[in-house]
Length: 396
Image (cartoon, rainbow, N blue to C red; front, side, top):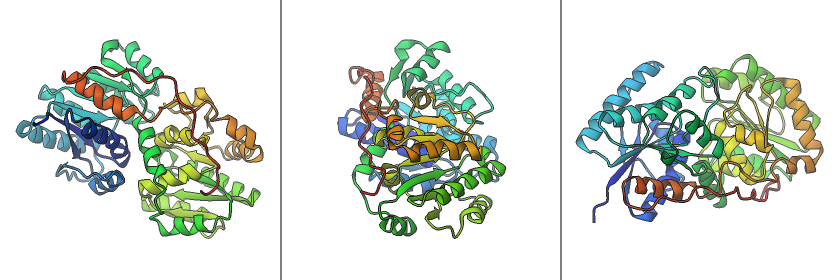
């Protein structure tokens, strides 16, 4: 029997991580045939992320826009997807989140009257300028999508408030929780040699995982963040830091100038997803401007200090498992010190579990997509959040 194809479109590493569990769940259910479509400027990174799930792209678009023009990238992606789907029309298209690739997938599918399923729908910051252009991208996709898979109740309410019919919205949880739990549970050896050496020599020190990848963090804000990291390492002799740097040469040079040669600090390039998931599972504390890490950390009982002035991941703030500290050096050090000085206060931040999911989001997304096509009954929405997994904050 030939199943209807459902194309899952991704262009970034994080999109690959969030789409991969859905593709796996679709294959397991056997109701539709998932087809992973790789777009964007860096297909090698997407391919690397999919490899962590024993997957690879089924189709890779030939997209080579010059420069950094988002408009040119959007144009090339729409053109490539239109050609693909005109020759090989899927029953539905799944786009994830808020990237240029997601917007292109939604636009191209809509033009061909192909139903659009929006994974991680309804996330909002309330500010079109922050994050830019992601806030606009996800709002535009919401106008096109037929099925809105919201990660949390507040995200679902955002959609209803914007006029989306409740019958087209399902609260699934976030598939990144499924992904990180599955990959971290495998306890794969570290691929990055520097990280492997640092963790082998950690001798029970508490790990702080630090990421500052967003463009608004670069420059002076990053200097302030790095100064906070230096201060914490100097103050706490039982702390070590792993900081995967953005690959941009200027950013890496800035990080190396601040932290290079400092004991108990390991600076790397972008890490394979299994390395990052394992580090997160072993961390005592996370300092990050990443939305993905904010969603993943509570599953391991790891609190996050968010290096942004505004975050659309308000669920973690409301649940108490994350705190906004921006790039203020003194505030970062103060809030981190509270958690480093008192393990009970640190553990209390994530005692209520992960507001972003229970590890079953992908199965719900797969069944909901099949239901859209008349191939299954609609799934139940995500129930109350399960408790966080135990975390020691020291190497396993």
